[in-house]
Image (cartoon, rainbow, N blue to C red; front, top):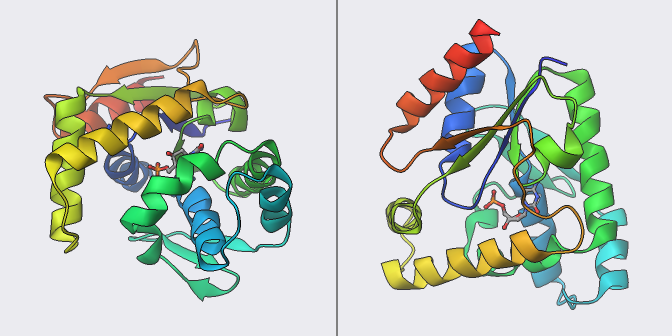
Length: 218
Ligand code: DC
């Protein structure tokens, strides 16, 4: 399978790099975090208890999430466009909680695998190399210092008009990392055969070029 799997913690640069790499390769970019975010948005809007395993599994099984490839990738929740709404800070704050339920993961992983069967993809997330596409030909794990990751998110959110502080973002990233890494089902983990890239002092273009050279070379 010529697909490319990219995993790593929040703010490591995955989505920007994945988008650039997909463009260079002519592949479809799939942001799997957007699916967990869309479901989180629905749970918030419907006052569903996000700690309730059964309620969240039912919600996942009764929700249609669609990704429309492009720049930006458009996200549809039950036929409604939610591309911008899913970036709201309250969604970011709760998404790791939603992503820990086994029933939620089963539903979304199946959807991701289906997309990857029909397209050549660059897919980013937390469990792509380990669980979603364990046979992907190319696997990367991106990481960066927490201060740099917080700074990147700070710039993104301030540009989007959200009133945030660097400290609050740093705390939220650390809390999400710890929930994503310690959860029982498909935790954030580097696949044994994934190539680790520290993006702290690299630009997104530099990281994408590095990955492109690896994919083209092998
Ligand atoms: O990539 P992101 O920050 O938009 O992801 C949001 C959350 O979704 C992240 O904190 C954990 C979860 N997630 C996951 O569990 N598995 C994935 N493949 C992608 C995201």
